[in-house]
Image (cartoon, rainbow, N blue to C red; front, side, top):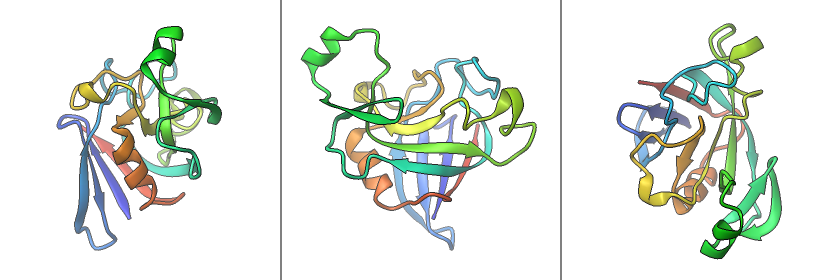
Length: 159
């Protein structure tokens, strides 16, 4: 399996090993646009891999903080209680860069920037760049994607 993330189209595509398109999903990438520097709030470009798949047994809408399920399930009431949270929901695919000096090591390291593909509370905003750097997906979509990929899956992020 291989993931292709087109930042211009705000779309994530899943391909098999022969390049056949298996699925495509709307996403939201960074409001600040593409970029690799730590602290930029940008979505990194280039060749990546899925470093870890987190949340396999969690229910849809599960709230994650620090890659751990808090035991909470997202709701409007929870959002009103915690308006400051950047909601990471349902599943996490943690990305790691493969290109030294571009998206790996030092101030451009995707993994140490904690860049994920994850579910969002803002599904109505999919198709628009509004994240803090991560790739946001609809919760049902990220669960479906999670069930089809594994750690090590190739990910290409481009404009």
